[in-house]
Structures are given as structure tokens and as C-alpha cells.
Image (cartoon, rainbow, N blue to C red; front, side, top):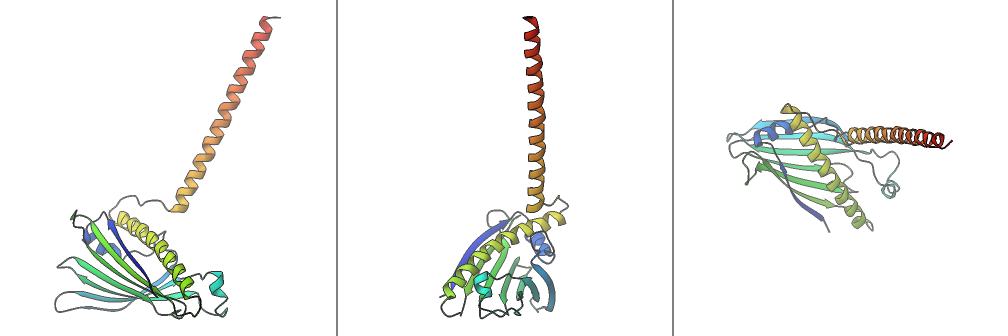
Length: 219
């Protein structure tokens, strides 16, 4: 049995901007697991469509229960092929991706269609489908559940990375990474705590002085 995913996302940027950002997505703060990207084939068809094939290398840490099923010397990197068809006339881009190693453990196939949003021509809509399968006897269901959960998590990172690059290309201040945001929040909380402590000390000092003055009046 294959696990299926269907989702839709919207980027508040034009199709031309998203098309340009697509080829410049890496690196970004949300894609540290992407190690390399190489174009292995590219051509323009007679009807002016751009066909490309890229090879991506990503890290892919296995869960502990999966590591016990494979030898220690098995590479943890995943090689992914990405085929894309760009139709500038109709403003659509379709991508197909799938892993070419670790196929015995799990195969994740994804299809994305980038097109102009029907509600706002200045936005881009992404329709995403994915199929997660495993041929491991006895644990295929668990592997597929894990693969689907990881895929959903990666989709969130992909969209954040996309938004980061789009903001950067458009000259805006990119959204801060999760680590940066957490660090700033921690520093702000520390400053607030220190300010509260100083204020409490000041109030306590004023209260003590007032009490001392009252006692002196009765002496």
C-alpha cells in the first residue's frame, strides 16, 4: 500500500518571480540538509518549453529502528533526481522528484505544479502530490508513516526557504530563521527579567526608606 499526500500552497509573489527563485533556492537557512545540486541535462524544445534534470544530494538521518536494518557503512546521503518542465507561455512549471538510492527502504515521489493563482494573478499557486512506498517486509507500513510525516515537515521548510529567497531577491529583509528568532526571544526575555528585577529592587528600596521615615516620626 502507498501513502498519498495532496496539498496546495500559495506564494505571494508573481509566477515570474517564483520561477526565478526556484533556481536560486539553495542555500537558505531552512535547507541545510541540501548538500549539492547539479544540472545534468537542459534543453529548450521546439515549442519553447525548458526541460531540465538536476541531481540533488541531501542528508537523511534514519530513525534508530531503521539504522538497525542496514549496515553501518550504508551512506546516509540521499540522491534525488528532479525533472522539470517550464512552459513560459502558459506560465506553468511542473517538477517531478524521486530518490534513486535507499529505494529498498523507501521511495518518495513528488509532483508539483506551479501556476498563477486563480484569485490573484500576482500570486503563485503550488499544487503538490506525493507518494511514499516501501518494500521492506514486515515494517513497510511503519516506514511509510515515518516517510509521510517527514515529507510534511520538509514541505514546511521548503515553503519557508522559498519565502526567504523571494524576499531576498525582491530586496526585502528576509524573515529571520527559527534559531535567530529563538535567540532574540531569549535575549528579550532576559532583558525583561533584568528590568523587572531592577524595578523590584527599586520599589523595595523606596518602601524601606518610607518605612524608616515613618518610624523616625514616631520617635
